[in-house]
Length: 123
Image 1 (tube, rainbow, N blue to C red):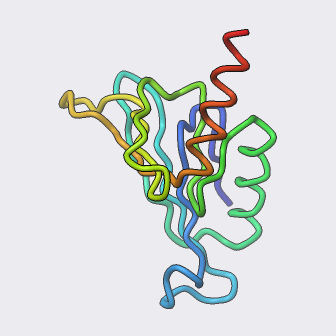
Image 2 (cartoon, one colour):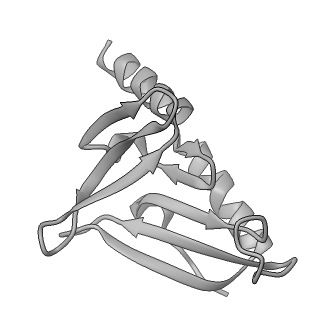
């Protein structure tokens, strides 16, 4: 059993057997980026399907935007830039301890959802 504090997650990438054929029916991977003095990435191995689905539901309830198998918190985005309307864009969710930016690629649908949410928040 494990506990993951979803209040500290900035983004999470959920890997299923569709993305990685080495995973089984109940085996999943979760990469999570956490806030703190710097953004830290943590890989959780041997996550069950139920744990991954529960994590995804919790993050979506908190307003995270889904971009394929990536969920990210729009409130954590410091900077976003559209590369191309077909390809999508890049969001910066913070900086690592060494000062390098943490950038995540998102598809155009997620980018539009992000812009919509950020515009609505300003009104």
